[in-house]
Length: 320
Image (cartoon, rainbow, N blue to C red; front, side, top):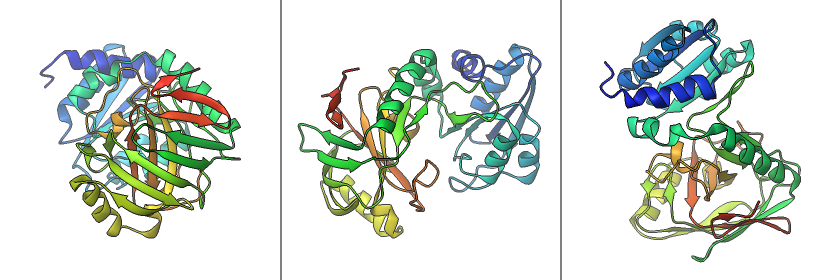
């Protein structure tokens, strides 16, 4: 089934470095009929180190957050390690949350492709862990964040008393959960705050890599104006068909994966080293209080990021 053995290299990084899988552990690979070749590569990687490996194949879910079949949900409760290369995300499902509570170590990989496995997934996660935790700590300690770019971004966010989170890609402890590829420090800004302009020039979730920047104006944490070309209109239509909270700031994130590059897949785009992203919509799963039917990340290239009075990134270059 595996057409390209290079997939095994990335799969082994996930199984061994990221998950810390041991030969005596039970590994469950949850995949769907659209990701069969990728699913088998992870199963083969786990089997190659002697782990007791099971692969569960389902029909692709219609939307992110749809539950897997009951039989797969039950199987997840008995696994030590769960790898989920799927078409849509199982991250925010009861099945995943229950397995996490029991102690399974889980890596969610929605929309993953062979290109991602051969590239961004092959990162050095020990280095990513070090820089990501450092940035998450800085986010936790800061009270305000300012994002600026040469294209006109000048946005002030209130992050006081919110906790910075580290997506490190290292899931070695019981109950650990995250995405692969990994590599971002992020925080949910305080709801009702956030003023200024944001020019998204990298990529936009739900749209892809941008040909023309999308210019957003925020007041009290909510979009009050959208400008740009065709892609700006695409975003406007998405928001007009969503709930009120879809227009509001949800997240500030910092990319820390130096193997990642903009490809129009948010799983990777938000991890690109030297970028910052601001998301709108839901942040209730990351310590915020805002619920929405969507969560859309906008990636900004060559940003300057200031936390309180300290310049953390200067025109895309880390100052740590």
